[in-house]
Image (cartoon, rainbow, N blue to C red; front, side, top):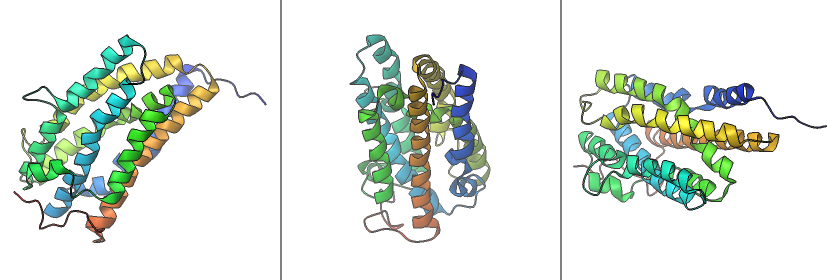
Length: 246
């Protein structure tokens, strides 16, 4: 039996439904964080582990660009690296994340070292980088479409952090404000590219599977965080609350 290509509107709806069903805004850790229920150490654990994900995004994008033979695609995609790494001396999401680390009482150098990252976080994030390096190009690109769902969680996070936590101010949470502008720009291009290049049902299935995989990468990190720092089962080698303080 031949499975026909979904028309564009149904294909896009299929992608968006994955986010509605599986994006990590639904995770109980985010509900706890945004409602002010996290302890200081739970927030610090989140900052440390999320740093590892943030730090690997430019590596993921560089791996993707190394596979692109189209210079126009590389020219557009490289802004993602600039958004995260910034310039030589200033700017970028990584520097802004380390401002958040300092604000919650952590030594930014300790956070940047990655020493306290949980094994499950490292495993999930490294799997994502490997996926983008090795998967078919349309799947590698579609995996970044979790950014379609990011503005809503960033908005909720900004409101929740400012309302409930003393460390939160315009400077310390500037990472999330910048992403409100950066993510939609990236999504607009990527979604149009994926829609245009998914010319078979196999392509559509690859794109949908990649997006589902990425939601699982994000969800797995929060499951590990909850088990380690909310339920108290910190794995060997992961950050202990007395470590890495400013």
